[in-house]
Each structure stands twice: as C-alpha cells, then as structure tokens.
Length: 290
Image 1: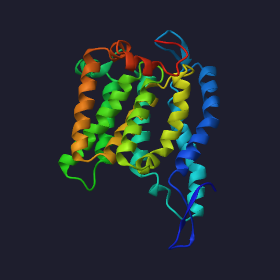
Image 2: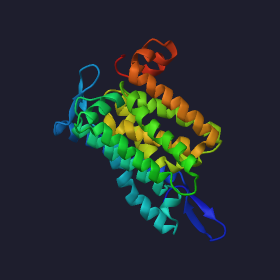
Image 3: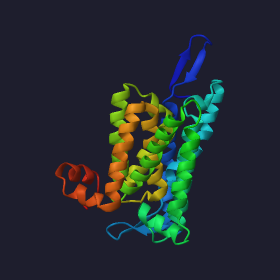
Image 4: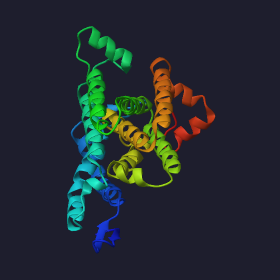
C-alpha cells in the first residue's frame, strides 16, 4: 500500500500525506511520454521561441496524471477508512483544475491579443477575449476558494495573491522551463520558511506531475502552454496563501504586482538575459541556450 502511519487511537495503518505526491508522480511518468506522442501524432504542435514545432499544450499531462492518480489513491485511502480530502483538500482541486481548464480554453481559442492591456483593448472593442475570460474565471475561482472563515479584507488579499500569481507564471513561460524553475525556487523558500512539508503534501497531487512535465519543458521536448503555466501559477498562489500570514501576503501581492507590471511594459526575457546569475539559472537543463 505504500508508506503509512499508525493511528494509535484506532489501531490501524493510515496513508501518510506524501502518498498523493508519489502516486501522481509515478502516474505522470507513465502517461507523459504517451501523451506527448499523441499530441504530435494528432498535430497539436506550436512553434517555440526558436521556431521549433513542439507538442502543445503539454500542461494537460499534469491534469491527466493528477486525475488518473485519484483512482488508486481513492482505493488506498478507502482501505484505511481515511478521507483523501484530508491530504488533498477540495479547494486545491477546485482552483488547480479550474485554472487549468481556463488555460486550456485560452490555448485552444486565443486570438492575437496578449497581456492585460491587449485583452482589455479587445474587450473594449467588443471582441471576445479568451484572456479576459481566463482573468474573470480565475478571479471567480479565487473568490470561491478563499471564502469561509476569513474577514472580507483577508479574502480579497488572498484572492489578489492567487490571481496575480496565476497570471505572473504565465508571463514567465516565455522560455523552456522558466515557469517551473521559478515555482521550484518559490516552493523551496516556502518550505524552509514553514519548517515542514505540510503544504507541499497538500499540493503533492499536482506538484509531482508538474515536475515530470517540467523535465520535458526545460529540454524543449514539449511546451506547457497556458494550460500548464497558469496551473503552475495557481499552485504557487495556493502555496503562498496556505503558508503566509496577512503581512506575508501583503508583501507577496506587492512583489507579484510589481513584476507583473514590469512584464506588461518591458521584457522579462531581456532582463533575465542581461542579468548574469539569472541568465545562468534560466539556461540550466536546456538543450539550447536562449
């Protein structure tokens, strides 16, 4: 059954919280190569920044692996009479899957408009904008998952973190592996700050597949698309909200807003390329340098 913990009060073994991460990772390792081949076979490809045609949107592999992994996980947890939602909360599933679905719609239906300014201009001119749809949908999902035992001010603050993080990681996804690397750095910092793996374990159903898919992304074997980059941002936002208190979330909102504003008016890629430390980190694992 995999790793377990013993419940002294009830006298039987329970799955440890790391099990969703392990099962989902193994599922992704099995599914990802076949899904990549299927995307290529069916013509789902797009040019990357170098003009190479790659399978797209490979972010669907994260969603597929997480969803399929729920089958064995449900059996494991049912056998121990322990609710799976205790280790994989419904708010995590709702926000992650909802944002991924909005990203997939953007990948499939997006037009020429890009960035908040571009999508805003499209809406003002009466055109349909998948970016505006994604922004509004992400806001709605964020408001739902942050509702409950919070003051209205705290809810708006957490919502801001979720929406800005989701959008920022989409902006970062202009070079292979950049979005996933930023997520890993943020996650490592938050785990150190938290001093435990509790939040990592709650997000493990998606983090495991994301790491597998990120290997394909950084080696230019596939592209995440908005499906994957927005999902990465959603997980980053959830991690921030689940770990940080009010002060930390205020700082997070300010930092996320500043980087987002910079990305709207200037090139984040140019900034990374001309900053030695960032440029080296950005190129790690790639088949080709930018």
